[in-house]
Image (cartoon, rainbow, N blue to C red; front, side, top):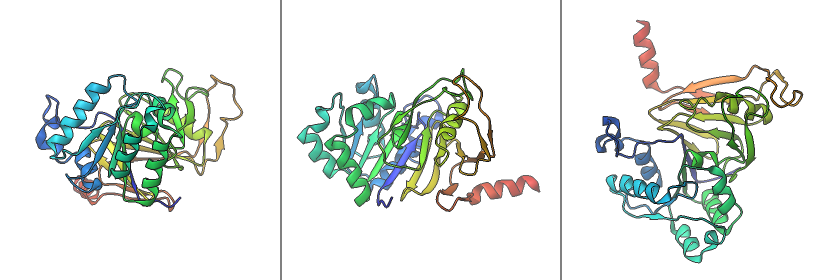
Length: 290
């Protein structure tokens, strides 16, 4: 899949400069994930569209993003709150999207994004711009999870590591070789991502911590951004996988599920299966050794 655009999936709760803690202030947002979204989009004059379709509180979510981007001196931001497939075909929305440099999907329920936007003219415009232009598709939480072809729809942690714990469905299809999960550390979603890659062993599982994201170029070159960790499950060389053989509710067994824990600045080449650790982390390791 050859594309010119960039994907920026985020694990949720990215710094918007509106928290009481010092890490959620204007001083820190300048170096945060949303600042990177603006830079990738072309700078403060970029046209950015926020789509809060996944959210049950779209007004509040929209205001938070408008305020956050305003703190970054980015004022050409538009809200496109789509609540039906008919709204996704709105000619005004279609024309605005054609002029956009970036679209950002909010958190909430990823199935709503697919339900109301998937397969519409708006979806086609986004996909075409992503493939042929330097266009940015960003998304947090549900907005990140919907990016993949095979999408996690849900699943709790009580039945973690048992067959049937994860619910899968069709996503927006912007990237075919990943399965993305969000709030990964805080909500203990290791089990459901493990089952997801067991079901689709040719795909890499990405678990994004909160305030942590990826910058993905050409559907292949991955850079970690933000303050937390990314857990990467690579099942492509599994030696044992009994997911297809056991009954629902039965524990699964996987052997040789390769796992990487990555942090800010680390890079991963999906096709070449190569990691490049940030020089910052190398220096820290060396100093600790000494």
